[in-house]
Length: 333
Image 1 (tube, rainbow, N blue to C red):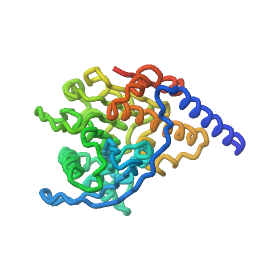
Image 2: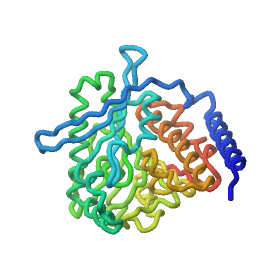
Image 3: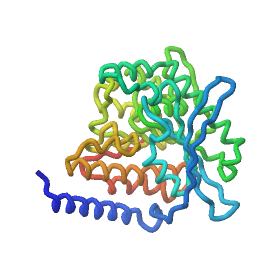
């Protein structure tokens, strides 16, 4: 049993490790810069062509000068999720100068999980929602959102030449398709040239086969984030190690893999509350460690490939590994 003083001591050790990691960035790359104030808006955007309404959450940094422009990052939730997914990532990115758009996808969102369903029925509903049709709808959702941000007044300070795509689980698969993955029986590319870099939290290979064929056209900068416990509840990914396969199947060049020891599927959703079900102090401390390091690494990636910061690219290439724990894994190709 872990006593309260021991728990506090573990927390202090964690803070010390994170502070050391921040210092290790060196003066050439200032990750711990002063943050921006952020305006948060919840809206519903209607795609009249498809008769489809998308709930979105916008995180809009408040510019210090009227001429300041911010890169844009989109976030797509996993099965059964909502626009609240990715909040731990979006909050961090936006305070460091990124406009973040969290998109909710009808048909594979929280509406498919009805309160009266048994656990078995919930798993069945999630598997049913992980269909090719729903994936197609999600990709179309993102293309619609990309069109909308070009015309809406809320994005007057957006730099539309610097757009990143990210997502968790089924949202990671959505991200992969938009980055160039071919997931169908026939060669069909749904990539979008407006997307310049991508991060997949809990990535996967569609149908578990032909990884090299599926990913050989993913040529933009891409970061995969996963963990040694990163399975899923509904049985689509049998072994967590499967989530590393997209990284190895992509062509080399600006590709990164982050694999956290004891990182599970819930922690990478980025939604507050999902990972807190584990109450042992060591697990809670590891969740906090993974969250903070994920924030650091993903921000460095965006800075490197959406802001073209040579110092961020250099840090990822030569010093990022030193920020991680001895049982974590960081690779690049």
